Length: 512
Image (cartoon, rainbow, N blue to C red; front, side, top):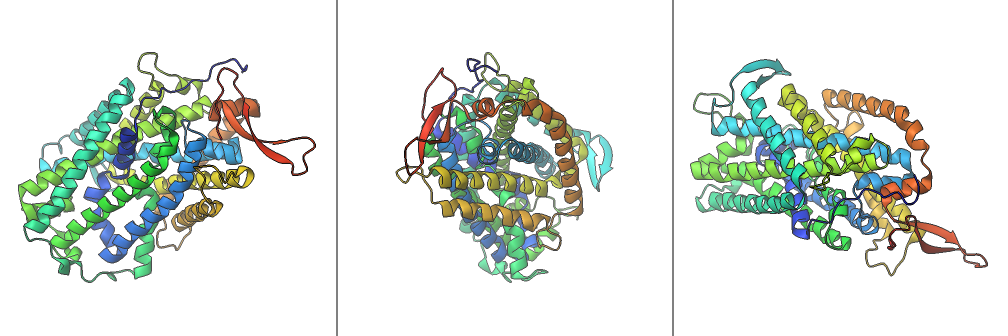
């Protein structure tokens, strides 16, 4: 590749409101409004659950500081993939990108398969038609598959046709979701159905306090995944990337508050131990516990508001991770680590259209495997995002140690980056070490091994191709026009100084 060859870039078309909405909408997905009772049961009580949400959010803010630092330095598509390359080289960037890609794709599918759960509650019998087969104890119906596929294709088309309109739509849906959450909580209190006594005993039902707390804390990468949509879209900011710190922290705070609030509503209307055993008029176990509880508290109005919140949570999650998945694949393709077709930009819409089509096809296959099989990917998603967190924090630490400038307005203390590394490693160990309270289900662990083996195979098959690219060229492809490098100025006793080196002479800009 010659220096005059142009590097494909995405247009700057997204404002801070849209980016913030992408993050919040991606953090708050179907689980917040459907899994509350299941999470309380997993924690062994509401106290370890709430503390797990709170501490998890705080830990992610520590990690988020490293993200904001790296975004300000390298506002390019690919996010963690690019940061891993800067800190550790092309091999690490491939590992990081591969692990993250599974998590991002799976979340689109998870949100899509949550739609039939909601539809079954709101419209009994309408979509449970055309029985196909049973997988892992879950009955797969053609009607439910068609519903999931329809919305996957719909959001795929919207992302294909442009980013700015998608961002504005995301902001609108997030505001509706937040309003619906506030009304659901206020309505429960006003109608007199909020009873703090239903939260007792606060913990100890089948788990120790510590074990329950850790099991929720280990879910933090999955619960709060979404704030890392902010770096994935950094190349499309139409505002200074330095603003990303506020967007990340505020998105995490709002996400933690919504998680805690919805769990509180579910656990206070009736004794929390009985929520998962609620039955409908036919005597069958209720699938959507939050909806059933809100119906008891507020009637059909309550169901309507929480159903609206669920729809917005599902739609914003699908929309946000469509964008995130496609940008990650685009970044890897631009670095020649994936086929070049994924690195193309649509001539009219200026979107990575091939990546979006790829995401849409993969996600359309998932509903045919049933919701139980897809739910096994949740723990794998946590593993993948933990890798992303680690490489971002470690990359920030390396950059700070090598080129730290105390006058840099975006500077963070190296200890903060190091703490982010420790948090990431701890979460990863909780998930993969046998005997841990948060150890993955056997099916999830087996699927993770398969994914790692696939990634290793693809890496060694493609290594010859991208290994031929010089470091200079790879720097340009992944990180853009300017790289931060260390030069030794001859004759200086103190040696190293910081200097910006322009790789592409077409445009000069400073990264530091």
